[in-house]
Image (cartoon, rainbow, N blue to C red; front, top):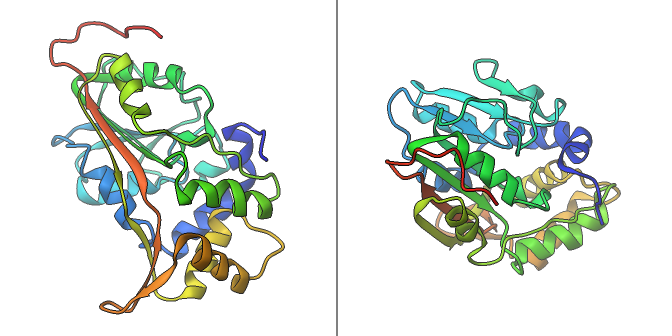
Length: 263
């Protein structure tokens, strides 16, 4: 099992992860759109992606709202190499972001928080950065889900440093947001899919995304079928990999005049 921190993990895996997203740009589109639609970005707004990885979420936001300012917070310099040069990149830790308080209209976090053990300082920092009426939207793996079992089981066995994800129980996102004074908090599990043209493409994507070593594409495809239910959709001829995540959003009160409420 992996005992490395986020930066150490993606100093090793970041290049391979980015390659998967570049070669299969539509695979995770449903996952990304579920988060983007929760952000409610205003025209000429300021958006922050944390952790940004190679800028996958930021790229999707920018495709829809090219008028916004984008900040990408990515602790790993290697992982950040593929980020759009038009975005502002900061190599900060997630709980010590070097931006002015109350400067963001929205902050999004897609599937990176399960590498962080203590999430409270992160959410405290994020709340401080939001403007009044600013939105925080997050998504990550649910504790006890098939996806979580796959990551801490199959992926753990075949990625060199292992995978030891700290996944989110039902209601945990809401508690973290409410503790920091956010309002209109909503949380749910979304049973979405990753999409591919064929089984081999699905296996190749997962091999690179998770830096799987010492296993054939055929065996990866078999594991995806047996453990997650990879199958062909007859109506579209696409291959669908169930990859449901837990999503949540909250808003900073319009009359908030504090930096944070503490931990």
